[in-house]
Amino acid sequence: MTPRLRMLGVKKSFGATHALRNVNLDVSPGEVHALIGENGAGKSTLMKILSGAYTPDAGKIELDGREFTSTNPWHARRSGIAMIYQELNLAPHLTVEENILLGDEPATFGWIRRSQRREMAREALAELRHENIPLSAPVRSRPIAEQQVVEIARALVGKSKILIMDEPTSSLTEVDTKNLFAVIARLRERGVSIIYISHFLEECKQVSDRYTVLRDGESVGSGEMASADLHDIIRLMVGREIKDIYPRTPHRLGKPVLELRAVAGETKPRCVDLLLREGEILGIAGLVGAGRTETLRACFGLDRLRSGSVWVDSREQTHRTPKQRLGEGIGLLSENRKEEGLMLNRTLAENLTITRHGPITKFGVISNRRQNQVTMDWMQRLDVRARGPTQQIAELSGGNQQKVAFGRLLHHNARVLLLDEPTRGVDVGSKVQIYQLMGQLAAEGKAIVFVSSYLAELLGVCDTIGVMCRGVLSEIRPVSEWTEHSIISVAIGHTEAQNSR
Image 1 (cartoon, one colour):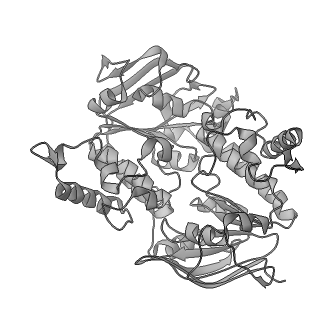
Image 2 (cartoon, one colour; image 1 turned 135 degrees about the vertical axis):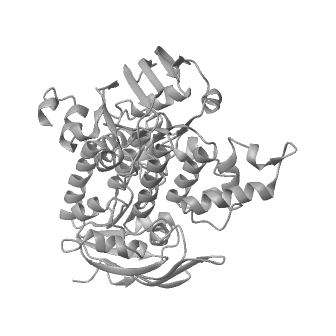
Image 3 (cartoon, one colour; image 1 turned 90 degrees about the vertical axis):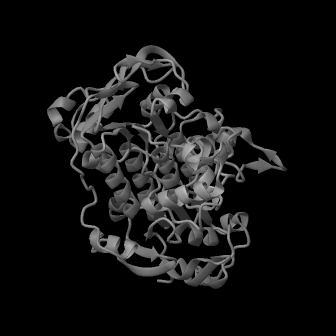
């Protein structure tokens, strides 16, 4: 069978940086092909070349046996290549409906057929089991997980030959991920070729037929996924052995440092009772829209509280601004690093040190030398891959951006860390580093609230776990009393969840 896609000897450089050195990839019709590698390995660059966003410096691309050169993303899309980007690529001021059909609007003599457009958008969301997302709402008003669903729905509208999925489940829950996998199975039956990029190797194993591993801009291995060993794939990815995916550092729980009593926001959460102690890693699970993110935002002072109280060090400190929370030693890592976490037009150093200038000033003036040195120290500790402290943060991969956002909390010396999906878009090697760092921070007596949609990591690194359902946080219990099944049961409101342990 002639491959649907063949990429041979592809190279791409940005100045002195060699993003792709020599990459080979082939994908057959109706195949799901996993493209695996660490952040900065070249996965997104390779796919941007295929989708027309970049032009390769060298190499050859064939589509259905014919040489193919994509001049721009519009040309690639018209040639049957669609891409779902890891960093959401939506028009925030347009509605959900307008975003789903943007560039593919049904029209007659230049006039958009609005009723048909609405029906096509509705069908795309229905295929993803998300008919409840309002079509007329501005997409920027929807939670980040729903925006991810809209991004996927947009790719489903076109008659694609090749569908590139770059971290499609990074903001999705277990239930939404299963729905997406069902859609992938239907697309495979239609003969659509899918290139699946994910840092969740268990997902790749479940959904993919074959795999290719990139490391440092080169393809270093490929094979059949059914017979693959995940440890061998990890070794190819990182160039070394990783024995423990969820390392644990011994730590002890101390006195209470943060307490939420019957906290309720304007819409969510509806009721949250939470007690966080020194040295504790407290996980919060739940479905999209359950109120996990809203709870952290309300606690940090970003969203208004309707009722309830917040206690810090056993003193009531309910109504506080984010600046005051930072002054209390409480830091928030937002799930949406592009809009709330980072200043994309600023340097890596500016982003990392923005909330604490003391260590980098001299006589009240920021010392560039000190700022760069402090930033270099954190870059080394967090293994941030960048040219240096003065590189603009927008130029970094998503995973490296996330490390910088995490590093800001550490530079600020926060003693209570509110982490909202901290490993989203981060490769397996970097995830292990973040898990190790969380354990070290807990051993130092710092307290962590850890929101995640990836149940395996909650069970792997947390001391205690609570589950949110429809805005209410369930009883928080030791991690030993939870399983993936019992967490999902509580998250969907199953009344017999207690019996599923």
